Image 1 (cartoon, rainbow, N blue to C red):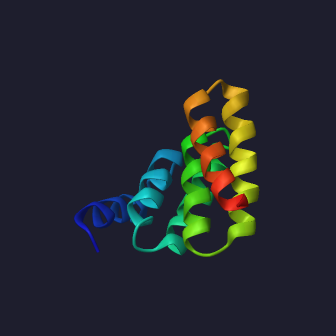
Image 2: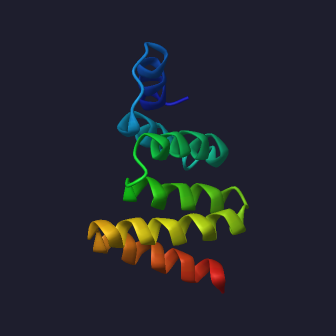
Length: 103
């Protein structure tokens, strides 16, 4: 386990729990453990359903774990959220990832 993950998990164990912490944990786990990343990213979205970056990372985690259908659904929802917030860059990135999955 990386130092970053240990520090973030320590914060969680000490009772701190919020969208940013869960997003950070999700991203920290993303490259090595997409299933654990998905768990934290879903929790981040429970705290803040308008968190565009969490939608994007969750889509990647689901895709990396082999759940293409859930990744497609997640990217579609994330694009809606990002566009609704005016977060054009996140929407554009998710559209690219979605197109790759749909090929």
